[in-house]
Image (cartoon, rainbow, N blue to C red; front, side, top):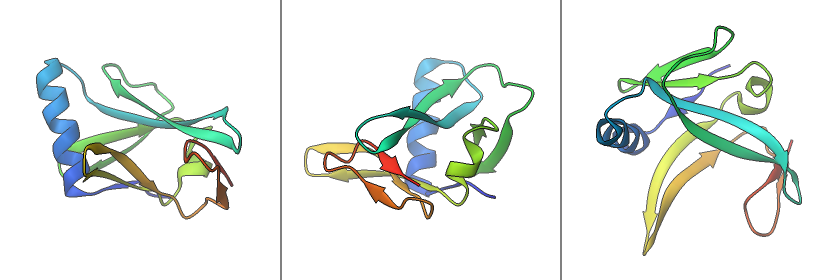
Length: 107
């Protein structure tokens, strides 16, 4: 079970952590919501939880709680810019379907 980052995602996270002036990395998780059932959640981590799994790439730590880990195994997190839009993009091999708005997914 591994979570990977692209260089672009790692650079964006590092820039934001520097701008914040604190933080150990990024927490990646899932929550129940949306029309397909689950959505990704991201937050910056100042204090890790004891049960977190930690993945590090390009000097960036990604923290994942044990409940989210089965849904996120194999995820690659990228940061993209397309025209005026920019944001994180998830490539999740566990996804079976996504909703029409692209905000939630099913495994």
